[in-house]
Image (tube, rainbow, N blue to C red; front, side):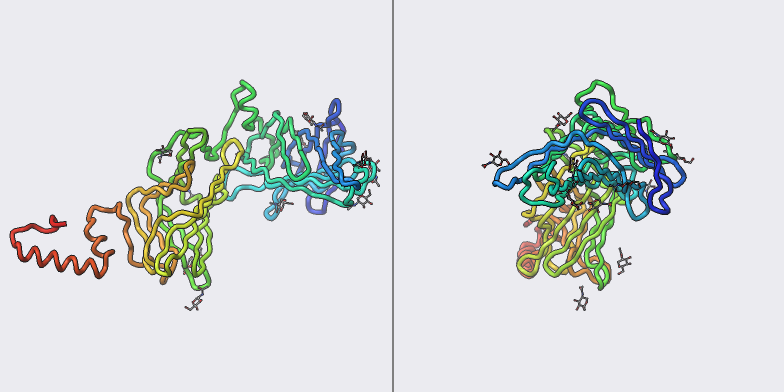
Length: 413
Ligand SMILES: *[C@@H]1O[C@H](CO)[C@@H](O)[C@H](O)[C@H]1NC(C)=O
Ligand SMILES: *[C@@H]1O[C@H](CO)[C@@H](O)[C@H](O)[C@H]1NC(C)=O
Ligand SMILES: *[C@@H]1O[C@H](CO)[C@@H](O)[C@H](O)[C@H]1NC(C)=O
Ligand SMILES: *[C@@H]1O[C@H](CO)[C@@H](O)[C@H](O)[C@H]1NC(C)=O
Ligand SMILES: *[C@@H]1O[C@H](CO)[C@@H](O)[C@H](O)[C@H]1NC(C)=O
Ligand SMILES: *[C@@H]1O[C@H](CO)[C@@H](O)[C@H](O)[C@H]1NC(C)=O
Ligand SMILES: *[C@@H]1O[C@H](CO)[C@@H](O)[C@H](O)[C@H]1NC(C)=O
Ligand SMILES: *[C@@H]1O[C@H](CO)[C@@H](O)[C@H](O)[C@H]1NC(C)=O
Ligand SMILES: *[C@@H]1O[C@H](CO)[C@@H](O)[C@H](O)[C@H]1NC(C)=O
Ligand SMILES: *[C@@H]1O[C@H](CO)[C@@H](O)[C@H](O)[C@H]1NC(C)=O
Ligand SMILES: *[C@@H]1O[C@H](CO)[C@@H](O)[C@H](O)[C@H]1NC(C)=O
Ligand SMILES: *[C@@H]1O[C@H](CO)[C@@H](O)[C@H](O)[C@H]1NC(C)=O
């Protein structure tokens, strides 16, 4: 094991690097990054190799494999601070560089691998003979792996990323970012592939919601209030309890959205409005509203991207929906449970819903248009909704009732 200590940028203090030279043709990389107080802030050990395909001068393609990394330096690796997340930067061989950065998911108990980038320099004639284009090429990957805080992520299985003309292989990965109190955890969080390939029970101590392992919580979700402002004040209002129903491999997982750990943003335009929710597990959940016939609004589109516990991302989009339809200048209301079916695999159950995506005045809801499910007094919305023609019917009914005197009330409908 070769260890060397070097001084990094001023203010970052001392950084200690340990590099373990591995066996055979592959090198295990190891980084024990410490902060100014010499406490470990990030620990990683892993193996990787690359295959790069490039265009040669005579219009043919060549491949090079990079498995012997040669001399490795870790310049640019940082613990991170309030502005920047932690980062592992590695330089090796003839002008290769590799970088991964981590982001803490707002307010919560997990973090994710934000991006992995790999750069190579096709100018080197020894490594890339007869390369048509010479210069630095960088490929980015966004693996969206989510890891709970205070546990070490382990993945001995082979992970393959394929982007453009580069194939990246990773294996024997151990990583913990955002190490607290300088102590690398002994609790492991296994990647999905390891879970299925070993019989060892994974030690998962995660408080992160885990759609694939959690038993179905069938209690009603809490009601949240969400709003969007523009320069004129509040322009979109929504109050609702949300329950997501994800079906994967014929197994439905039901997740209640917790309003107090959910952030929201959005935008308002004359013809469309957006409400976007996000949390530790929900990368985004977008509700897009549109105007039709210049006098009504409706929920036109739902886009979702969620992290599942196995590190994979669940993504669904449907821009051809037609829910929550009401006249412009009013709000849409539905107290009973309603289902927005985004796809066969993704449904949203709503509770005590009230939404107004356009023409919000003084931050308050306008008159509500109720859904037909709230039908305890079904006559009232029908009559109100039917407007003038309804009034005529009522007059006719009243006339008939008047004529038949003994007949009781609404039964005629
Ligand atoms: C990392 O470095 C610190 C400080 O030198 C040391 O105390 C710690 O044991 C190291 N951790 C690992 C996992 O090598
Ligand atoms: C392209 O060049 C390589 C050597 O640089 C040669 O092996 C290959 O046969 C050439 N291909 C064609 C189609 O000329
Ligand atoms: C990269 O490593 C994997 C796993 O050890 C191995 O299967 C693969 O053949 C290697 N690829 C190259 C190009 O060395
Ligand atoms: C990395 O840092 C070391 C020591 O500061 C320096 O000698 C080396 O040239 C740097 N390497 C790169 C690729 O910047
Ligand atoms: C090109 O790569 C070879 C092999 O990695 C290396 O020995 C050589 O120094 C590199 N040339 C330049 C100009 O960087
Ligand atoms: C991570 O790196 C990517 C690509 O270099 C960059 O776009 C992104 O902003 C970085 N994220 C963080 C949190 O620094
Ligand atoms: C790419 O490699 C060539 C030759 O090895 C070198 O002259 C050039 O400076 C390198 N480019 C960069 C941006 O490092
Ligand atoms: C770090 O130390 C603080 C204070 O001693 C303690 O409350 C916290 O639980 C520790 N965190 C971990 C992950 O050990
Ligand atoms: C704000 O209100 C003014 C006056 O009602 C209107 O002209 C303007 O378009 C509004 N701005 C936005 C962003 O809605
Ligand atoms: C939106 O504007 C209202 C007043 O119009 C204000 O009370 C509220 O705090 C604002 N919300 C945000 C998120 O800025
Ligand atoms: C979730 O979706 C599945 C499949 O569409 C359905 O069978 C199940 O009843 C739904 N559960 C809830 C609570 O909505
Ligand atoms: C969120 O709400 C729950 C239950 O209502 C409460 O126990 C918890 O403290 C709240 N969390 C925050 C961050 O407000």
